Image (cartoon, rainbow, N blue to C red; front, side):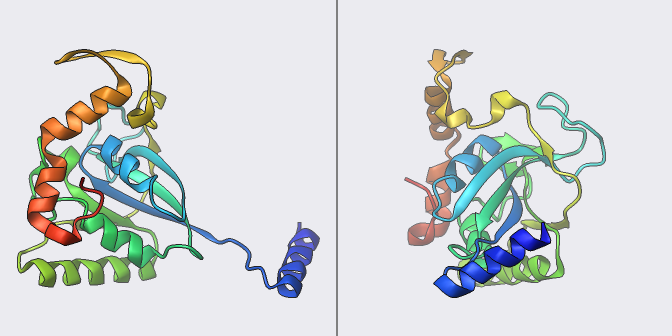
Length: 205
């Protein structure tokens, strides 16, 4: 393994090609379907996984969060996008002034939060929140919490916004993709983000 790494480093040095370095960011911004859909569109993001974070119970589920918050784990290429950029984008994709949930999803399982795993991530998150607060002129209540175990959500919740499977919704049978769009619009997510952030709003259409 050491030999393979040494050869790769030597080749990179000779060709001027940098080895890709990935990092993970864990954020919570209400419904994880929406946060996953947003960040999978970002250049440099390698993957986004829906899950649960911040609670004490093991093996949380959609029906029993066990004190966890709906969150996503973003794996990204640091040569393309930085942690600072991702966090700044995240804060402009949610209602950072709402301490009771996000949009139509209420309660502690849907609050906005940034889960940090290093001192550098913590400093970055704190700085981004201070900058967002100054930009808005309002108190930002998004929490910064130490990362612990990230629990991957059930497969039915992964890439929900792309799904073609037919499910029953309040508006009748819909594909998962259509159900996601119906939910997002009905929940007023994009409208609220645009009202709060104006031209700086991320992802809101």
